[in-house]
Image (cartoon, rainbow, N blue to C red):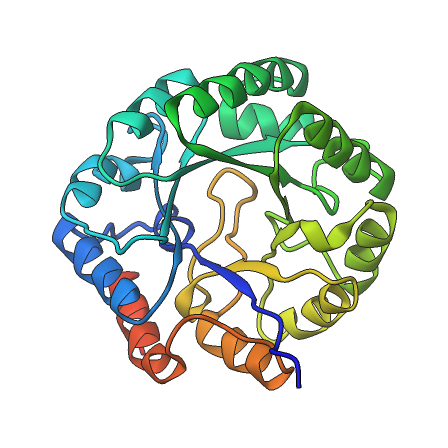
Length: 286
């Protein structure tokens, strides 16, 4: 009997925290991240190196990293938006990867990074080369990859074209990001059917309630094995829409994936307590 496929699960406390009104203290963040590492999570999206005026919830990312000690092989990723952020990431303790959000919605790229798509492509080319020189892996998130709420032009072909351009540029890690919870099963099917080698991509989806399951069923059929979410489904992008749409709830998704015959890294027995902790840090009632 062959071993089950291994799922790459990226736990995203950064995405959970960045839109909160009540910001967890640095010590609270560190304690939670240590608990995630102890439970076997091996991919963490834990901070960002952007303007503290834009995202004050992430202003302590360097301090958080200074107090962490990850075992070999763990990927610690932080989001960047420009060369200044990449320089900070390289100087910080323990960062192994940086993530760059590249929207195919011009409206969102201006809202999120303050520049156009055209300007972002030029910047990304320089960032990729610099990240390689600095020894950091680069993940590009194709934001609004399943449509947008602004009326900007979009089609599955547009998302596929962005993926192919990134691959031609030499970007090896690409994740399609829904960002605002637009994607239903039909949209996920249409995009993954259009993309060459969808199994090589990640999915960062947002969904309310139980809406995540049909999305993942479509993704699994296309061979996708890289997914992202946050405990208790907390979070979302504060620059995307007026209301945050939750992340995929880790404590529900991972047991479901295992039930589908896939292998996951974290200790599933630790997830309920970690979800309670995540809700507490977010100021939510359990």
